[in-house]
Image 1: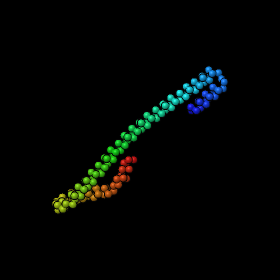
Image 2: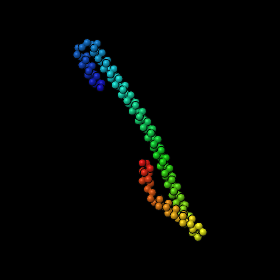
Image 3: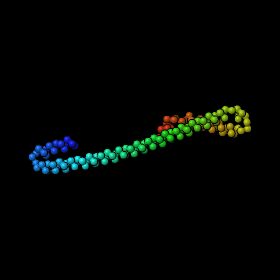
Image 4: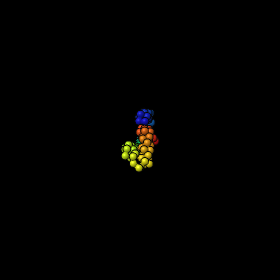
Length: 132
């Protein structure tokens, strides 16, 4: 853009025109260019602000995702611990010989369900599913 201006100014001043009209035309061209530069600065400022807002939203989303991952991992760990506790209870022979056969059967079934749930878990696949 500035090369065009320089070329036009050379043409105007070397053509033997009235100096006033050449200066006037150059001033008009400079004013036009100044307005264009200001417009481009405004566009750049607007784009920069939009990019900053997008960065802030991305940071918030990343933090929320990390919280969700931590929560899901904590739930998986709690389930694992519960299944381990049920397995420990079901392995005790004292419960088998007591009068709580129904409770024992329920514990065995719960442990079986928990083991199956944990064995079906694929942390990477589930994390990807939670991410959307």
